[in-house]
Image 1 (cartoon, helix red, strand yellow):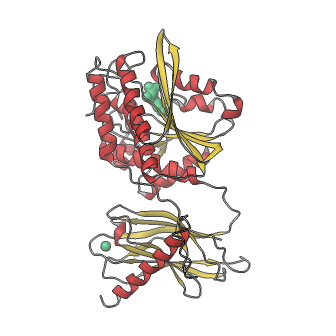
Image 2: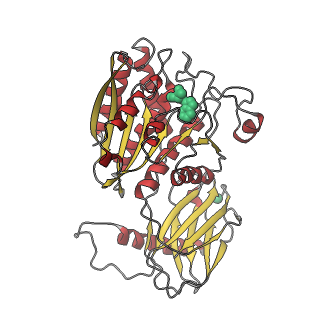
Image 3: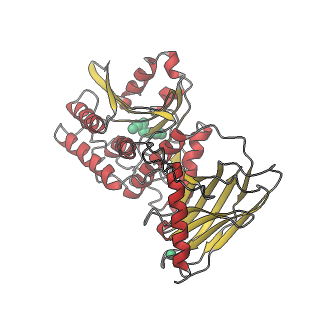
Length: 444
Ligand code: TRP
Ligand code: ZN
Ligand code: CA
């Protein structure tokens, strides 16, 4: 105890210095007395944990809309337009610039809703979307209230964070997907070629809360696919490549005009195998979604865990791909060996890497990627230790009860010679929850 208190205070002080330097504060707040501390640490914006309760509240509203409008939210029916109005009102109130695009299909007016988050590079657009229409036989809560609600709540989280990403963020809700990707095709076909060229990627979310879920990642653009896989590996959930019908959702409209695409899916009418049930739980020999395109696709037709994980994955991808700047031609050193972190009160543990052939000092933008599996990241103090023993605090008990610490940090290590043994040091300072260093990497 007498040892750990000063340690913790020192770490808090180091973190506070990092925060001050990192902040793009107005000049009144830019302290002229800012100390030239050696511990300038800037955490990359951490993706939020999307509240499952918020996502489910949107599903409840979509269910009510269906119930009040003949039981569905299908193209051309009152329940579809009411769904659009619900989503649009939330986005308008959160500061998005919304556009309602109309088209005609099967003699009825259809609607796409587009929401732009002001700011970012107008020549580099990252878009996420979901179809908002159901089939006429039911409320379409998994297909595709789930994707619609997760994308909506991620957009609202962008607003809550007042995120200032490098890229321009755009969100879309498509009409008449169930009639053959009509709305998204209309949107893409009406984009001038110069506008299409500005897309860095389109992320599609169609059925992400299936009641007997699988965790499927679209096998399209490699960087998008890897982003989702990194998220799921960080929470210890195995994924498979999506194979239940490539091109069966709105990403196909974007892919057809050369836009990089990716997305997530928890399965439709295909049957879960024994091997899949082994790794994901659930029921083998049963469809991922027995209510696919049926009247029972209501609010009971959702697996909360799958919806929660996939919603967090949407935000993880928007935060990471939206902030992504070109990867510098850095040299990386990684240690992927697991190191057990003993529960408090236990000693700090370290995982070493040996940097070699890096000329001179480490850069001011030395990047440290940390992947720690733990059941309570608020227990952890995580430091980078330079070859000469200088300690740079990366994480000091933030994040509360959230699982795992999967994060990227930028450290001003310019006072350090790059070559030598660098260590990730982790100490658990609160009893009960435990975990291990899964991997970490330093990039100069
Ligand atoms: N909305 C799609 C459909 O009705 C659902 C679907 C089936 C899907 N297979 C898919 C979505 C594969 C994404 C990927 O056809
Ligand atoms: Zn669908
Ligand atoms: Ca603990």
